[in-house]
Amino acid sequence: MRLLCVIPGYWPAFQLGGPIFSLYNLNKTLAKLGVDVSVYTTNVGLGGRVPVNQEVNVDGVKITYFAFTKFFESLGGTGWQFSLPMTNALKRSLKIFDIVYIVAIWNYPVAIAAYYCRRYKKPYIISPRGLLYPCVRGRKSWKKWPYYQLVTRKDLFAATAIHYTTKDEAEKCHLPLRLKNTAVVVPGGIDLSEFGDLPGKDKLRQSYPVLKDKKVILFLSRINWKKGLDILVRSYSILAKKIDSVHLLIVGNDDGGYMRKVKNWVREYGIEERVTFTGILTGKEKLEAYAASDIFVLPSYSENFGIAAVEAMACGIPVIVTDQVGISKEIQDYRAGIVVNTNAESLYNGINLLLKNPDLKIEMAANGKKLVREHYDINKVADTMIKVYDGVIKRP
Image (cartoon, rainbow, N blue to C red; front, top):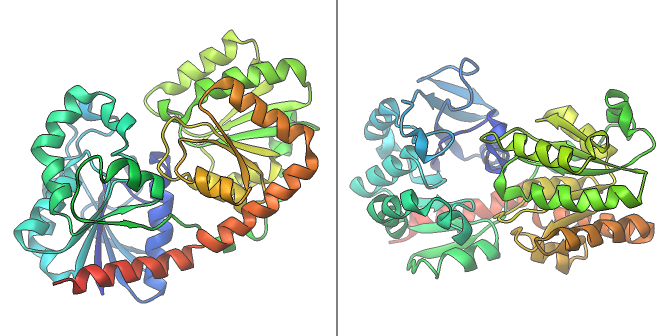
């Protein structure tokens, strides 16, 4: 099988969000299983760090980072990513692939890949990764609605299948948009071998002495409006007044200047000394953050999956997520964490419950590890995706 994956941004631009981690893990695992995987992407967020307009091999995956033109930045933080070199490569090479897997929605790489798939009658799957959720479509709808009508609608309706990472995403996006094509649900996955030998609990505390002897509440994700940081800061400000031994650790990169708002809230609530911002952490440093933490929180307003929550569970940390996180139902079913509403009081109650019940923390940590092993092991996910790809290719 020759698979072409088209995505606007890719490894190692992990600051662009969870789908980058998820797709990187999936593609390298597919390559190990014998799939011929190529990736067409842009060098967004990677200026000077990767070769441009030439193929490189990373973990068995053939990646081409195409240069793109910066305009239409009003469409989003990374713009529309118009790329003439990618366009030419698609025209020249699309015929050699058996199937095309397209990730994302509101950008040029997605639009041009879908267009040429239709033109050359090549089967393709679109994976929106949360970008079709009602609250996301409704945000800045003045520009998304006409783009959807002119471009995205045709791309979606003509796709052989739409891949969602949770049942929640499929239920809230597929039928409401009146899509008639096949909806497949396959979760994201992680490489469990990366979480088998964690650093010591005190490793991160050596770098951040303020964490010493504290119960650490960890938030690890992009710093943007979707992640519910306003809820988190409000709930933690209540907690901090009642419990001296807790500290909030916020790990992640600033997305569109939202960090400034979060730090302003922290200052307004007078909890500057009780909150630590580390910026983005990857690799060993990210594992150190998980290992040092007692509770993981993801209070998102919209989250199609929640890869960081999966990583936290793999590390044996009890998690608290809102009911707007795509895997919240699975977490609830496995008693792998606490699911709360998207408000500060509900989040405060969830954190307080775990802090006061160590036995519950232990139980949920064990259940979380079981959930990850059974559903989010990247090897199992890759096997399922191969079956999906085969089914699409063989469809008459």
